Image (cartoon, rainbow, N blue to C red; front, side):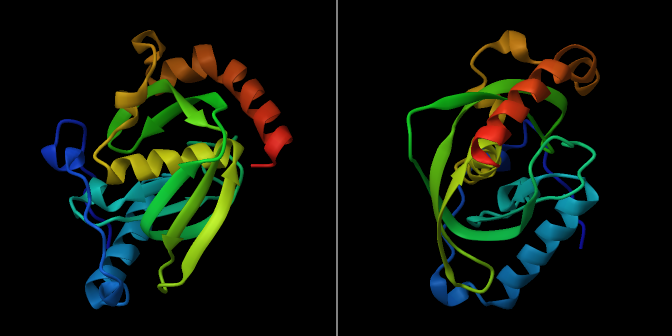
Length: 190
């Protein structure tokens, strides 16, 4: 079911999510939440969505990047369900990522993200995930996990002068950003 996406200013977006007890991972409640997140993300053409963005206080998010008109430059990420995810930086190196968010309509801004992170989580079947993420894809995962800690990309924008509407991003910033992204993707493959 497609759910309403909470927008900037809603206090629920600022509440850290609670871990899902392992015994509840296969519950009907969590299964329904995962299905709703997938439906809502796809309907909104998002690259990911966290449970907090639909008002659910659980550490659950989904990520998927295919042929996304909002992010044509993003490397593909197959549908990924994360329960109780944790990220650990693998390097101090960062890259400047122009980010947007379903909860912050028509606004983008530059956020520094770690080039490499280690992801530990449970998948939708309760199986353990432990893998490394690099490049632009690492940034996508960092963005979604921030939501689970009550953070929005607007909290991480280094220079408020980088804020722009989507239209002005396309007109004035996209070409240079895509050039930087292509270099990052060629370096890390993701």
